[in-house]
Image 1 (cartoon, rainbow, N blue to C red):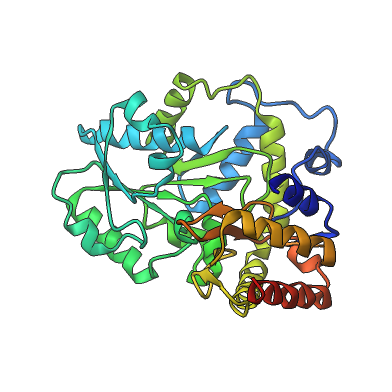
Image 2: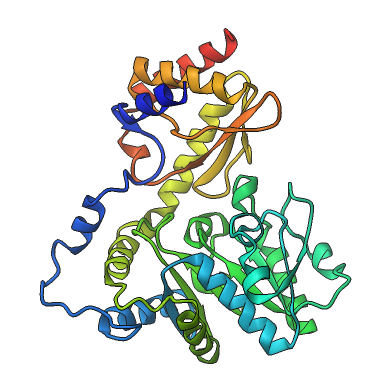
Length: 361
């Protein structure tokens, strides 16, 4: 059934999530108007990389920024630098932090850093969680939004209080801002205002921004210079990274000013899901362009329902469904340019049919 589900999704006339398929046209569009003689970067140097790093440092309100081929590399390095500075090998972060569940224990195996897990895995970190840490830690990592629990966020005052406490206690604070720009409409703050609460910041350039791959790590000049050394040690200084940098720069300018639109559309879409029988979203009202959809049906049953739905309506809601307990399933929504291209009458049709199919199970 999974093959039929994926096939039906790919053949749909419209897709709801993201900016579009990841194919070669993404790169061709980004470089179409560039001069062919533009020089590439070489081992982390050159105008292509240095101009982009300077641009992103300004956007984030930090002294300097460094482009990395991956966020996994950037964040492990950030925590290593802070641990070395404090002379401690202990950090704290959420139980569902990317470093804990998606990186094959890289922080522990490569850097011998011990993580302390803060908060229950179903909620965001609070000031009480930070204050009640029993061990001394060099750094605390906070992810905005918390992807694995539907993109939930602490309120902004809570962030300010955590930042104030950490500075008072001499604890470094790092921001996993893979989707930083996506949360700014909810907070009604600039990137600079949010980043000012943190000692170091990581952002992804391929998620909401829509580039090919890569990440930016920002902080003080001293911090970023140390990160360049660790980047070389990790093998991150490829001879050239310009396809990633040029696409990141291009799509940043294309998408960053649309985050308000994606946020409003996410709220609209979540409301449509919540009207369907046996379906709820987390959060019920999104706080960014992303949320999770939870269904009271098994993965294989939902794949069958969706495959039929896509054939009947030509609208692809999702291409990925995951198990969620013994009798439930879920998937993630992250809106970009595609949602606004779906005709409203056909969107209304697909949700009416989804509601009918869920009721008749």
